[in-house]
Length: 265
Length: 296
Image (cartoon, rainbow over all chains, first blue to last red; front, side, top):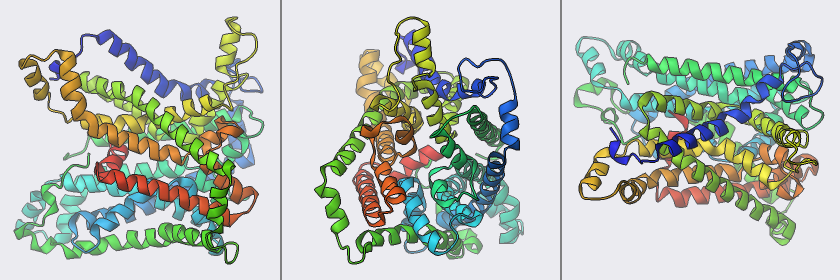
């Protein structure tokens, strides 16, 4: 359909595309084979095959507690951000109130303000509130970072849905609550799920705020990794990296499946 | 994509039951949450920059502008951000274009190739570059094995390393907004240009490229603003001379415990970011810029 834009130099474009895909994916993927090495140091190509670094990750107290902490923070963040964000998206797309565009803008700022600044601001205040270095503090911080993703995704679902369907439900005798639960919610559910998945990933991968808001007794996986990569690196870091990547990738692919099965787009 | 307001935006006459104001209250929990846990920390941090140490006034800011070393970090931050933005544009524009001309199935795969790194841990990706670039890393081992070099090249702790890593991490932020604009360009325009006698190259340059500019502006803006605040990547891949402003801020607060000076620089960085976005908001809709980055 876009024939007229097509340049004759197709081969060049294909080569360029392949190179770019390589640049996008390959550097990160080198980590994966390295995590299965038999050697005691990180090397590429890896020597032999061994799962010892994964075993280490699961048995070492610092790594394994980091993993548990990360999972807890990410799940709680996803829940809190999805609830708050979905409500906010409903209010922002359907409500009429003074200052709506201001709220809209503020809701997106966590994406824009450099994360180091957010980290320092939160740390300064959370220390006074005695929630720094705790699960609660980090969940609250990550929820603020994740909210924009929920608001944008649910907001898009709401704006693109056909509100005549609600009207039809109302005409057929459904009260507003029932119409919302039976019609609106199922339609925007893919957007809500996308928001939840993005929130989980945001928290799961987040490191800068977590560096400030965690302590030696409560660390997440990325923070543990940050502490390690600046010193001696053993292949456990590669195993941890691979684990972080796999979780994110699986969730994203799940998201693509959800999107494909979206009832109304 | 976040496009213009849809039909659902305005309550219809028949839908009085669901009408406006009852929905408004749903914003409240998130608004209060952000006010308490996001805006309040930033506000108190700004306050701290003029009250720490007691009666500091503007002295923390004066300290920054009086020292050439600090200003050099700021200019360095700008340069790294500029070069990363240009690199991303040069690599990202042709790729976004490619995504619009290939068949849908291939375009979907290319989009996944952009989204996977986009959502992958920044720390993991930086660590990977560390492994690739260091003296015993993949590139040096490869070149030595080939006999091209005998001594390892210094790739890590250099500006080149920082820019390679940052461009790699920021590339999706360039491709996504450009692609979002490009795929909305009506192919009829191209046909019209061809019918009027334009060669494919001139149709591309004089019709397609200008129409894609809003995406270019959005992508450059996003990459530049994000690059200004980078911390992890320059900390792991850069040398002492490549220090960026975020590193200086963390250093002052974590190591020197100089909260007044650290927060003053934070306020400066935040102000610079917001001013750039404010100026840009006259040219492009910011919602479109960030919207295109967070949805597919």
